[in-house]
Length: 578
Picture 1: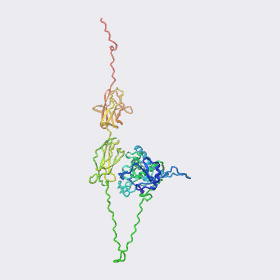
Picture 2 (picture 1 turned 45 degrees about the vertical axis):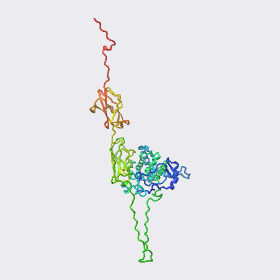
Picture 3 (picture 1 turned 90 degrees about the vertical axis):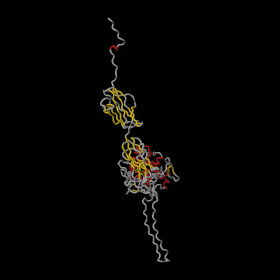
Picture 4 (picture 1 turned 180 degrees about the horizontal axis):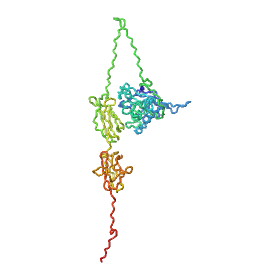
């Protein structure tokens, strides 16, 4: 049976405990954090955004546990036995859960070093969302021993999010529920999910997968979590509530003071388990059966002394139909392309065209203020300019939403970007994008020094060329170099200059060459055999750039030897006439 904790609705806080505990924590406030008149920890910077919908958050703004960190006494009172730190139990984090947080931090340090994500932030969110996976009730692979589900998001005190996964993750085919140790709603997990334990699956009920997904989620948009503003924004994007932000910051500070590993399954469970107030039962109490009313004594026929006659029973009131107007999202019938041009870019470049989708009613009218999610699908390393494979944009008054620019990776070929409506199940709209190999359209030598050599010798200068594409440096462009027979015959020559391979053998074609970051390509040394003459070296790159370089092999010219008469100085004396 799935574990369903009745958790406090967003904003419900045990203020009696909060006033005492948070006031004590205020002594080591982070920048941008202060306390209010009741001693509660609050932020003075970023505030929740009223324009952010529940579907855009990790949790769907689901309820969360409101247990506050205990007061750690820096100088505990002397006791006869071993002193016990009041916060020692809460500071312990189950071994597998703690390992998942630290592995996620390490992965983000490599993938997004500028985010500066601390694992203690994941621990703080994990504490508030699921009580550290229900006290570490996970197996050795990080899978929860039973599903952890939030309440049904049916609009009854919470956000209303209709089913988006067919019940695949949350077992509910009517409405979505937050799922797993980090409480992702299925629609968010669909694009934010990660495989954190390398088993080839993205499972929100696995603490390694969920922790890595949460880490990437908190580090999107280029946020730097070492700054208070970005830290606040990241936490609020997880659950758009000021109380939630203050609570997570309190646990973050608490875990930063020190924590330790405890065995799986031995962690403490949250105590604030009511949807309305601390300590209430998570399951609604059954309604007691109604006691039938005592019927009135009917009046005696024609009587005038037996009291008044019973009034006619009033028919039960009927519930009027709901008059709640549909939201803009409810009116979307389909998506249409909004004039997106052909999506093509060279590897490593930014696509010049952006994807634009239009949300329309059944009648074809554009719908404003609808969130469109764009997701990159397929085996590609292309990303949006945000560094992520997903992005969300709000439709304008014409119903159009424009995705951030796409940035091509090194993988060439086609991939798909799918546009979907956040919070509504309509057929997605697919866009095909193509990444071509890096190319150059021009090659030039970096030197005009003639390339000459004597038979059996080596050329003093190495051939170096620079590649450009439309005037810009063409880096990482593939190239080949071949010593050809003639300008009209590009076949490899079998005589004349040559390169040497690793074994010192002559080769006259080089493949696998690549220009460097400055577009430069420097070829290995050239050698000459005993054949003299003029030879040609042809260099080709992807994209069609070609350069032919002339090489000359000639013997050293020597001056002719002088005749005997020329070797004497002065003129010879004429012979005497006999």
